Image 1 (cartoon, rainbow, N blue to C red):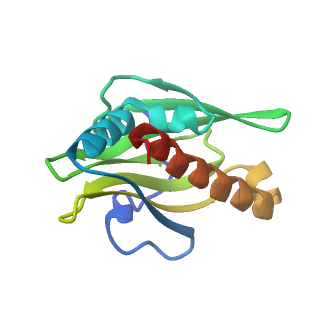
Image 2: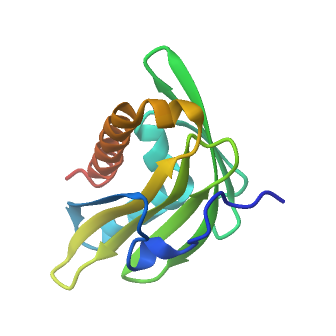
Length: 167
């Protein structure tokens, strides 16, 4: 059994740990129960990552705590392996989300949390919270480039659920 490459498992649910790059993003991606349910289904099936340009293999669908996530992402001529494991997953009537942590071989060390919420006003809000630091020699060397790739990928994740809900 592979273990995550960072000690702060679950920290994306609260105060983000010091010593990492922090990322927070949120977007309204739809309105109403139907839009929320479609977004939640897509979130737990890996569709968000696929629409963002990654090749995704999940050990089980819908994903849940313990699901292994094997992604590949192309950046220009390079392809990166991105192994993760789901460290938290939950679906309720008003929220749905998961967080995955990095496994050995991932370019970064850290955790990323994806959550959709149906607000009292009926809006479907999609939020992403992450903390990370370089996990491989090439991400240490290419620090500013790695941050740009992370920001662009986050934007693609947010856009992926916009397309799901027709927002």
